[in-house]
Structure formats: structure tokens, C-alpha cells
Image 1 (cartoon, rainbow, N blue to C red):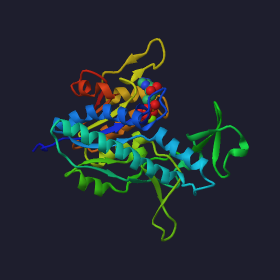
Image 2: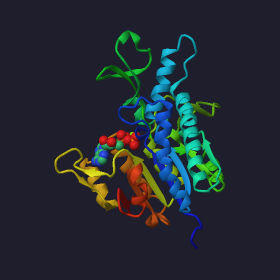
Image 3: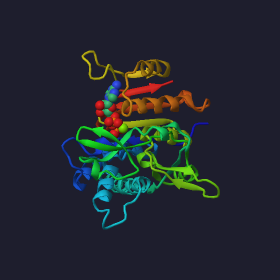
Image 4: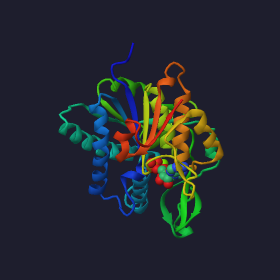
Length: 316
Ligand code: ADP
Ligand code: MG
């Protein structure tokens, strides 16, 4: 029997919410978010059951800078608390702009943000080799807080943190229960990273950044989504990206894109994890995977991409 409502997970790219030349002032972010929600609302209108997730790079960077600059007046919070703060901040912006867009379409649906923890393995090799740059650039060594890892950047030094694999979404059950009644926003910024504490300690937060696309793939898996849509600042996935023989991928099968992935067409840390998330999602759940679809495109092309007329569409 066919399910009544098909389920879609939409991942919003953090970089598309603060555009080049913008500083991230609230009206700018709300305007960009409103533009995103204009397109996303159409999915709800077409009857899709919607679950949203989002990146947080620029926003959590700002929160870290605020913590760093006011640390002598207010106790600074660790990175994982800053991630939770950014889930609240961005979740609110989505709730408000999506509410307004749905209201204009005559749709009245509850929208809920779930502060989400994502379990990572404390033995993940990422903890031995931090690679993900975050937060402000430091100009002088003397200004760099002790105990952190740094790498040289264009403007001095930048903190780097581990980027471990998402293992389990702690609030998975809560998300599955709420999604029948409401549009859910979850796993923002890849989730608040937690590990199992030693002894009787239960879960404890840890300073790391989980890739938001890999977590989005996991989210799509646990809600048994029919479709995963990754919205970013490019129209499609390209082969030979940035080279004269660059070429857009339109509709592509799993084994074909896997081959391109192995040939190194998709940059680590940007397009790489999106394609990786797509491949994992299409490999899981043997009963349903043949009906699954992944779209990677820009916000403005969402409606066209749903009709197979734009973006990159990946199927099994
Ligand atoms: P997001 O915030 O949406 O995760 P990212 O910057 O991480 O955005 O990823 C999108 C970027 O990936 C694009 O702006 C583009 O510069 C880069 N990119 C790397 N490889 C490719 C490729 N093969 N095709 C298209 N874009 C690519
Ligand atoms: Mg990214």
C-alpha cells in the first residue's frame, strides 16, 4: 500500500543564508531565509511531509567570536553549546519565515525545532587529527587560547576541530513522533556532538563539528524519507569543477556518481560530503531504496528540480 504522504528531508546550506558581501545582519539573514522558505513551502503545498535541517558555519562562527571577545565579562561557552545556540537561532528564523510563507498559501501547520544531539565515537580517528577550521582568525599567537589546535590561515591562524562521523541521532524517536503532527527542524549544524561519558556519566558534549550533509543523510535514513534534497549555492553538481571542461551532472545513477566520486571530482568539505550523503542514503534500506531520490541544487531551482528540469538528480 502506498503511504499517504511522502516524506522529504531538505538540507539548507549555511553559506547560502549569508551571501558573499553580506555580514550576516538579521534583516539579511531573514530575507535569505524567506526566499528559501518561499520554495520550501511549495513542497508542503504539494503534500510532502517535511523535515528540515541546516548548516550553521557562518552563524556558529559569529557566536564563537562573541564568546571570545567577551570572555572577560561573561564565561565563554564550549563549541558544542554554541552549536546548540545556533540550532535555536536558525531554527527560529526558519519557524518564522516558513510560518509566514505557509500562512500566505492558506496552510496552517505546526512547526517545531528539535535541539538535536548526535552521538559520535570518541575513538573516531578524526579526534586524533582535527581538520575543520572554525570561528575567528587570530592574528597573533599570544591571542590564541591554550589547549586548542590551530592551523595557518590567510589571515593568521584559525582554530581547527575534529569532524567525526555521525553515529546515531539521539532524538531520533522524538523526531519520528513529532513528524506525524508537525514540520520538524532538526540536526542543525550537523547536530550537537556528544559521546558516551566514561563510567556512569551518560552522554557528554564534545568539541567537534559533524558534517551537516552526512547528518542530513542519516536523518533521511531514520525518518525513512522518500527524497533527500540538498540546497546549496550552486545549481548542480559539476564534473571537472572550475576547469574549462566543467560539465553539469543532470540525472545520474548511483554506480556512475560513485565512479566520479572516486575519481576526485567533488571537493572534500564542500561537494564531497553532499555526494557521500546521497550515496549512503541510496544504499540503505533495501526495501525502499529503489524508490529513493536525491536532489542537489540551489534554492531558486527547487521547483524545477522536483520536476526533473534542473539540478542534479541521483537515483539508484
Ligand atoms: P553549503 O553551505 O551548502 O554546505 P559548501 O560551500 O559546503 O556549501 O558546498 C557548496 C560548494 O561546493 C559550491 O559553492 C562549490 O564551490 C563547491 N564545489 C566543490 N566541488 C564541486 C563540484 N564538483 N560541483 C559543484 N560545486 C562544487
Ligand atoms: Mg558545506
